[in-house]
Image 1 (cartoon, rainbow, N blue to C red):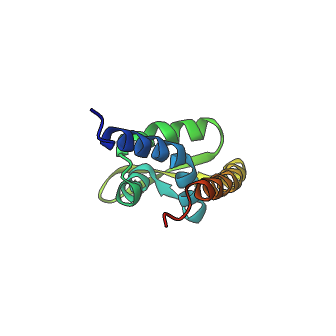
Image 2 (image 1 turned 120 degrees about the horizontal axis):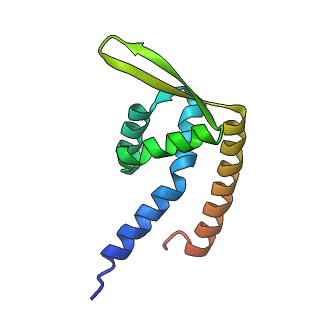
Length: 114
């Protein structure tokens, strides 16, 4: 018998996956960053794991949404810092508009819970 937990968990996973690129683009619009720093911030904020970030960063770089540069580190190996490209900024603007429209529609349907 389904008590709703599995359904809720899978919905949470799907929502996180759907918003992941938007979140990363938004973070990079504020400052350049490296993948581990991005994943740590996302893990703390929304519970997205580190293993999810690296394939996304490679895909976003391949699509021209971000560029990277290696920065030497005194405390370990070099870090690959990512920065948004103009195409990345445009994608962020479009996804942010789409997200706001989607959230407004869902909130209208779901209501405020009263």
